[in-house]
Image (cartoon, rainbow, N blue to C red; front, side):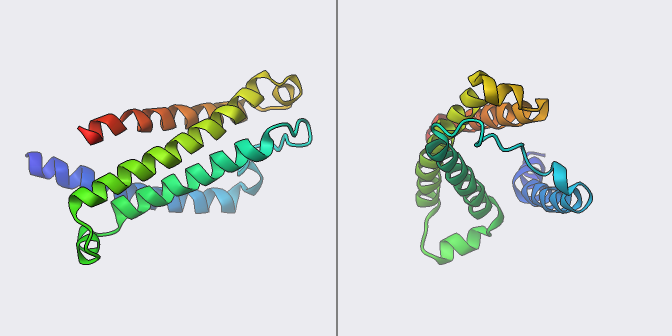
Length: 151
């Protein structure tokens, strides 16, 4: 029973999630192109945007590619490259911490700006606030798992 659950969670589920992500993104882009983004607020207040936006976007893109490399690429590939399971785990932990903290700092700056800058707040849609809050909560939950991975 345990092997079946492990096979589903670690063998099948990542590919299912990736498929849903790609197909869902493609369908949404095809059917609702103009709901694909949050409203730009840079013209309303430019203070701190360059640092916050770069930290957030570089962090989240690298987190995505790290998950892609760790979960989608086959285990035999890593072994073929001479990367042991322990080395792979430590690279994932260290890179995850670096890019996770980068994303958290930048995202927190963007969240604070969207919530407490009056000009930005009044021009924000509820979905803008929901998305940045959801991303930050998801990021925090991911960072909380790092000590368990080390253990």
